[in-house]
Amino acid sequence: MSDYSDNELLQIFQNEEQKHYAFNLIVQKYQKQVYWHVRRLVIDADDADDVSQDSFIKIWKALPDFREESQLYTWIYRIATNEALSFLRKKRNKYFLPIHDVEKELSEKVKNDNYFFKGDEIERKLQLALLQLPEKQRIVFNMRYFDALKYEDISTILGTSIGALKASYHLAAKKIEKFLIEN
Amino acid sequence: MNTNNENNELNSIEFPTLSKLDRKNNFTVGETFFEKQLVEIQQKCYSQTQSTSMLRKPALHLKWVVVAGVLVIFVSIMSIYMFNGKQKIELANNTITQEVQLADLIDYDDIEENTIVNVILEEDTITNINNTKASIDTTALDVSDDDIIKYLIEEGYDLENN
Image 1 (cartoon, helix red, strand yellow):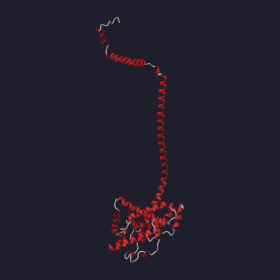
Image 2 (spheres, rainbow over the protein chains, first blue to last red; image 1 turned 120 degrees about the horizontal axis):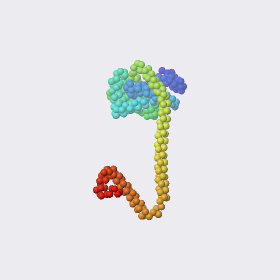
Image 3 (spheres, rainbow over the protein chains, first blue to last red; image 1 turned 45 degrees about the vertical axis):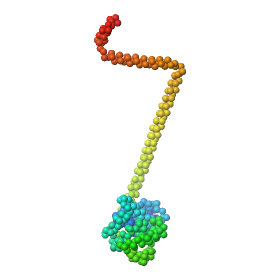
């Protein structure tokens, strides 16, 4: 893991000769966070690998134009979230399926994948409950619950007001609780 | 990142099950997954940079070739169009000139009706003579000298005095 701050990494990146070095440090710093964030959205391990790699390729291409108006990590999160959502959208369009069918397919993966999912029964149910949620609520819940992001940062990443995010999170938590009790 | 206690939001009264759960990540990957992924990301990013910079120059050339091609086609079409237009104008001018010259030569007021009729008849006569001559020439080719002499004798034509 890199000990450099985001600003330091960006400064190193400005130097043409150290561009690759700086980018390697950025990838190492955010690779796992990006991968797990994407994985919780697309569920499948290979898909998460592809989507997170594509996210870093986009980050590499866009980094020279990155303006330090936002923080580097919220910008990286936004790219990864958009890539994951775009992947799911393509998946839905590819098979001409209604939305719930993709989520159903992902639920089957969570139910049957004993190699890449190590949680106990209640944790598996939590993932199944998450897949019942509308997409936006699922993203907000994941970011807040698992990644412990601040509402301010989630607001920057998703472009949604903090009030709306709090409402989404609360609503998602209520639905999950109900699902866990009923199942 | 947030270090706030989110359990305040998910209190045990409202969320008895959810509040008890550990917020750990239950998905897993292979042992060396992230090392391999890092290498793949680097390869993809840096190879794309190289291929993009390699493609950039031919792409520029290609752009200019396309522009030049379009220009050549445009100029050709314009030349053909202008040439055709010029030809049409010249043709029209020539026709007008010829008609004007003809009109100058012919003073229609001086020509009497009979003269025109005579000219037409004269032309018909010449045509008829030419046709007859042609038919005679054709017939003459088909008849031998003996047949002609025989025919003249039969008709009582005096060959010796003529």
